[in-house]
Length: 262
Image (tube, rainbow, N blue to C red; front, side, top):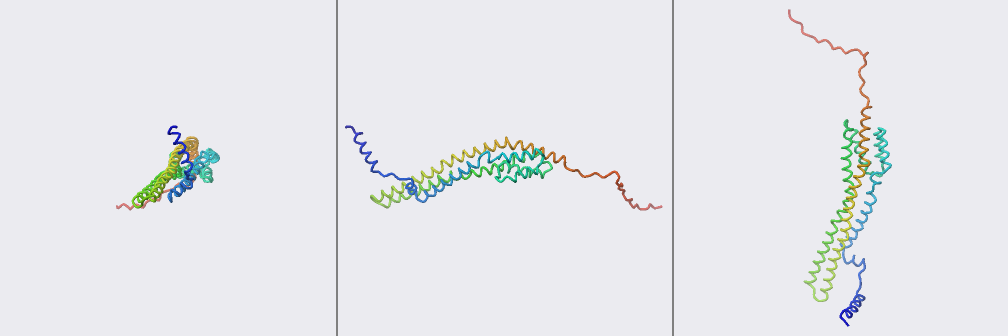
């Protein structure tokens, strides 16, 4: 009989006698910070679902809104294009950009020449707003490890206090409890931070890709249509009427000149 045949029954017996902790018991072992990290994980899941629903091509550039704006601009109806933008109840990326660009260009005599730059600047502002939707995940990705580290420090402080103040079995029990607190908080912080970091990077790339596609497919043609519509409106604008040929000429009153002396 070899040593392995003796040790295997002993290990099986110890495994059967040992008690495994449930998920709720692991959360309880993390203390107050454990519940905070669980709440942050639920918030992170809600933000991920919100971004999945919001950051889609159909949400950034709804087909109906794009068609309405383009149709109005091709017809030279700048006011109709404005109504199509403001009537978008979803406040999509395209309607926000075009409403800002049209508002800037219609108040400028050279608006037809600034249509493209106006759309580009409005697009940059709207893109920054989309990135702000994703910043919550970035904050959670940074806060999660910090809270886990705080729990680790609290657990280590309690462990060293137990070592210095207790003796015998009580010291071992308290030491194990505080070490469990430290490690569980570290694990919970990483569980929150790792998915948030990955989701933050993926959503950032998704925003950049969607904005690039919408700009190339929808906003660039609209910029040309807006410039053409503004140029046509400026050409058809009524000019001030010239004076009629039958009007009486304006005569200048003679000046009083001093009499010359003899």
